[in-house]
Every structure is written in C-alpha cells, then in structure tokens.
Length: 569
Ligand code: SF4
Ligand code: SF4
Ligand code: SF4
Image (cartoon, rainbow, N blue to C red; front, side, top):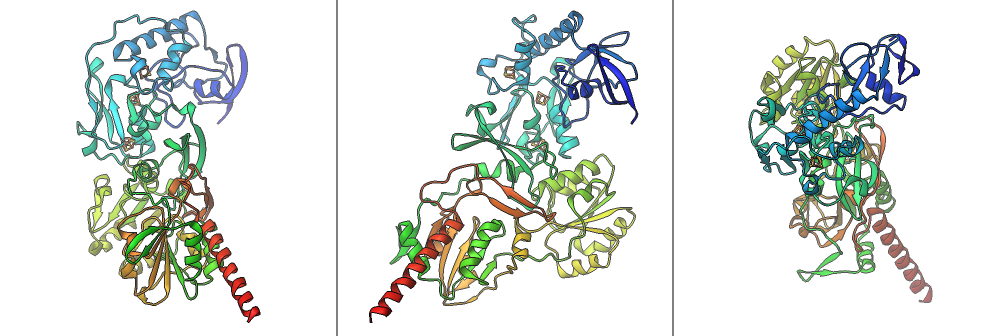
C-alpha cells in the first residue's frame, strides 16, 4: 500500500492509504472514543461514537472511513462533542442502564464513556419495556436490557469463532440479540467458546460464574497456555486472591489469536469432582489418611520392578522426574504415535481451500482448530468435507458429509481442491491406508493429549495391560479402569481427584489440578510451550516432581540404613 500524508488535529502524519482514520489515530496515540469497534473485528460503523470531521460535509465514523491523501481530520470540536453526547444519550435511554445493580459496573465500556464524555443526566427517560433475560446456558447469561446492539458478539461469533450462532432480530427499539433463530441459548448450536462474552462492552453478556465476584481490574492478569489439548492456546487468566475470576483468549497469541474453546475457558472451572487433599492408604480395606513421609516411604518400598503409567497431559518436567525414578519403565496410557505422520501445521489452515476432517467433532474437541476451519468454510471461502459414522456436530456446518464406508467419495470431492488439508486424530488402519495414498494432501495430526508429542520425544510408549505382581503407579487427572489395565498388581494413583474410579488403587496421592501446576509441553505444531501456575494448591497437595523427590529421599535413606545394618553385622 502506498503511503499518503494526512493531518489529524493539525499533526502531520504518514500512513498507508486505505487504513481507517481510527486505526491511524490509534497508531499515533490520538484517542477517539468508540464502542462497536474492536481490534479483533472488522469495522462496522454502527454506534457512531467515533465521528470526526474529515473534509467537507457531514461528520464521518472514524472506524469505517479510509484515509486519503492530504485529508485533514479533526477529532474534537463542539459539533463533534454534541454528536457524541447525543449518541450516548440515545444508548443510555434505549434500555435499562442503572449501573448500580449491574454486574458490569466498573468494567463497562459504555459506563466509562459516560464518565469520560461528561454525561451527567439522562436526556431521554429510559425506555421502560423490560426485555427478556436468557439464563438457560450453563456458563453465559444474556440480559437484553443491557444490550446496546453494537453487534460485537455477532461479529466475533461468526467472523472470529466461525460459529454463526448469534444474529439480530426485530427492528428499531425492539431489536434484540437472536440466538439460532429464537432458540433458548442452551438448545442452540453454541459451542461455549465464550468469545461473545469476551468482546461484549456492557453487562449484556456475562460469565455466570464470575458474576459479582470482582472486576477485572481487581484481579492479577497472568498470561499462560492452555494444556487441555495440544493446540496450546494462549490465555489471559484473571486471578483474584486464590480463585479464577475469568479466562479469556489471548488476542496477541500467534497460535490462537484470541479464539479459544469450552475446554480452556469454562470446563475446568466447573469441574465438581471431589478433590483429594491428603494421601490415603487402604489398610485392611479401610481408607486411612497418611502423612507425606509415610506415603513417600510406602512408595519407596514398592519401587523394585515397579512401573508408572501416565496421561499425556503431564508436563515435560514431571516426565523427566518420573524417568529419573523409574528409568525406562515409564509408559503412556494412550498411544503416542500418529496413525499417519503429520505434514502440516496450524498455519496451513489459513490458506487451504479444502479441509477433509476425519472422525473428529471439532466443536467438542480441539475447538480452536474448528474455529480456524469454520470461519473460512461457512462463508464459502473454503470447503469442509466431513467423514464420520457417529453424531458429529460439524455436520451442521457443511453439505459434504460422508460415512467411513464412503471414504472414496469424500476423497474424490477433496481432489477437486487446490490446497487440501486432512485433519485427523485416531484412524482405523484401513482409513489410514487409503489416506496414505493421497500424498498430495497435507496432513494435520491432532495428538490425543496436550503433551502426547512430549511423551513421544521422551521415548515413552503405550502401556500393555498384563497380569502382574509388580506395583503399578498411575499418574493423571482422568484415571479410570485401573484394575482392568493391570490385574493382580498393587496400584498407586497420583491424581487430583478422589473419584470412585481411583479408589481401585491401594494408595491415592494428591497432585495439583489443572491451574495449580506449571511446566512445559510440546504443542501439535512441535512448539515448546509453558503453562503457568495460577492457583496455590492445598497443603497436602504436591507436584509429581515433588513426590518423586520425597520418594527418592526415602529410598536413599533406606539404602543408607541397610548399609549401616550390613556394616554392624
Ligand atoms: S451495561 Fe454498563 S452502562 Fe449499562 S447498567 Fe451495566 S454498567 Fe451501567
Ligand atoms: S459462546 Fe461462542 S459459539 Fe456461543 S454464542 Fe458466544 S461466541 Fe457464539
Ligand atoms: S450483547 Fe453485548 S456485544 Fe452483543 S450487541 Fe449487545 S452489547 Fe453488543
């Protein structure tokens, strides 16, 4: 783009032709008030708060007016202030904005602008009609009475998330945010990605769990990576005291650019499984709390020939600690090898024209990958071909749905593409074989868990169940079917939760839950990412590495003690 010269408030500037007045002003530290504009969204020009004088004629919205050579822009004058005040008066008058009882008070962009622009009375008596609230969604509350119809939520849901759940219905005063053509939120196609809440400037869309627990500016902001799946989305985590207020996608993270999904934003905060807060040993069939020292001694006494089986979400640091204790006898609960080697990275999704998704519901798992695909396929920029036998909610987003048996037809459709990316996780051998032959397609493998690639790099392979008299340690947060995995063995479960499933073990040992641990993992793109510790775990909870250190200390003590006994004989 060619550079052109313009003046904003008398200041001479040079900027790329075609950029909007707002973007150029912001880049040069000149403040223009906005409401419907958002850095992650395309310009909309809806609220008219950003009006400026730019050349002859009426005031123009800075967010939607491109600059031109020698343009002279004025961002502040009595005429502009009057116009902006009228917009604010209309917005406040249109719905219920009694801030005192609003969850968003103190963190609302509309309220902030009221203060900033000097709104000291209501010009228009607020429209008295009460609109509906929708409380059916498990995580999000919709209060149409606080909505200013800026449509940030509609644009974020469609253009950024690719979900296309939200719209606007009715006309004029009666305009309302619409969910899937009048569905209750909970019955809609919403994937609970939370983007709409993240961009809403008012109290119209609210995280239920965070309601009245505090404002964002009262919380610490911690940038971390999500380890709920191998995408590794960047997150903004707002922590107040020792609880999480809210979780947003990090707009500046190159992996996800602000998009994220239910698994990172909501699911961990709603995990109601009972926490294990102290080690417990099964003695004569009765669970008895044990001290850390007794627990470590007990584990140290079981190390000979013992093996450990881990989930794929364990950090590299915890894996290294376990390897130092168990040597080569560290195994994975799941497969670690891809059914077909990957040849693509996430960024290959950005300019592909065909996606062939095999057997994965990207609205439920790997949600960010789903967004990166759907935001291109639903507007028709690219084609989504889905192959699956069971229910897959992605089917609602495409006309090209095939069964596994009809894979040949799906492949024939895909061959029409210029840049085709196959997206897959587990695959049947016959399907893998058929895909292997299509060497012209790129392959994006979705590893099974967040650090599956870390396990593979550490040389950790899958565990084979067998009859065994040895002790088997299991480490993870979703442990189940322990007895069926190893019959006849002594079992130890290191886990955050005291579920009925882990009570099949002989000893249960508390480790941190998702936000209580830190460490590195290897993403699906092969990047080494770091997740931060957000919350302090309870007193009896120790990291896997800390338990390993205690067990090792006990083991050494017993070796020394045996040595002394041997020496004195
Ligand atoms: S949405 Fe904003 S302006 Fe409206 S009542 Fe809530 S805090 Fe006040
Ligand atoms: S949570 Fe996500 S999918 Fe659901 S309505 Fe909001 S933006 Fe759309
Ligand atoms: S719900 Fe929020 S983001 Fe959506 S239009 Fe209303 S005020 Fe704007």
